[in-house]
Image (cartoon, rainbow, N blue to C red; front, side, top):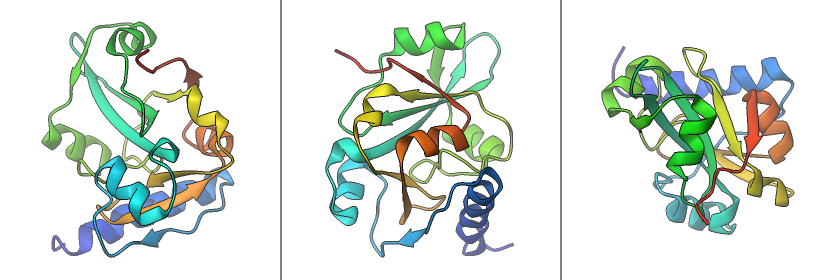
Length: 163
């Protein structure tokens, strides 16, 4: 498969995962990068806080991947995240993330991963009617109600933000 075909495959995985979990989404290709929360907010016409950042870390001892869904305006509190994961965490290498989840950094979606990844969601996102998340490519996004998105991602809602 060519590199041009990979994003379409990733987007199709996100769409299938949404459908399989009962989450109705419409993937939008923005035509410009949505890699950062600021870029995504500008493209989606929403606040940075409504952007769901999908951050992947790995356990220092186990090497297991963990997904943290956090508001675009918040920073992940690594100590809180490690407590939830049950082990110290480190940033996962981009190649490892791509190989295991099927998503490149900047397009990691909260759903549609190739493997099961324990997921945790920032409780502050529940303050919005709609949030926007990556849909598997650097310019692809979808919107959803946060509680429905967290259910589809099988994410445990927690206090994850730096204060």
